[in-house]
Length: 309
Image (cartoon, rainbow, N blue to C red; front, top):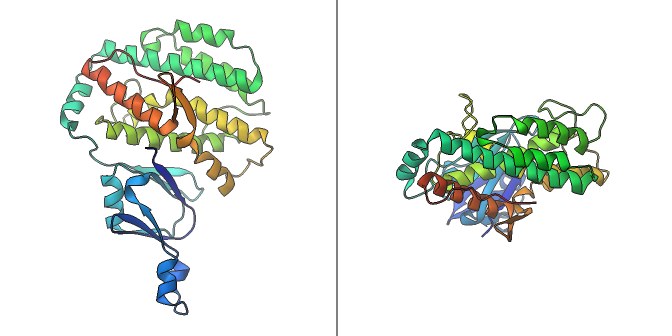
């Protein structure tokens, strides 16, 4: 079952009652002119078990400790945003699998050759998906990208990921002055927001699969608490890129990250993917990917299951 993504961009009270997330508007709660039965009817209840991601994007949001506890116990990822409405924090449960200790040990004991092989598979899948997006969106020649994908070596020792990325970004968004940079001009703002949502989905799924999101197969930044999430999300990034490209093609004003643009980007967990020959929502596909990653650490599989565009 695909979990829901809830976005809160206005002041709101969030609490817990009967395993339901209770959503109340402050102006209704504080009003003395409204009858109590109307206040109760104005409440919105959402089953906790149906929620996968919660985005908190307002400084006047109040959430109770009980609601936080229930969300985390049900493996929900909670994203907090800064004053610019960009995701700045991610809260995940400390445990999400009954055999977590065993899985942690297998992940920690993974050999360097295995890590390099897994990274090779990851980059190959990423470049292949980038090639499809580039061809579908712009009709650009992608023969070179197919060659780079086929030539990726263990650990991507030739850094073909960077070579492919330079060609990809140069030809995907033909906007004057655009380069892919977190602090760069739009549509970098849309890409940053979309990747943050994707990262939360991947990190949540890693925890559910009993893996440490901190310990990457390639990324090892000492200040990054989600290195493994950043690794595993790589082949999924092109899905975000394609969505952003479609938003721009509609003629939307993407200079500012409006609520309408956020609403479109919050559909990322439900985007259709093709994994193992079957159609699946992105959030479901990610769970298959992280489950296969554990099986690689366990020795049951030799390849990570990634989607193909």
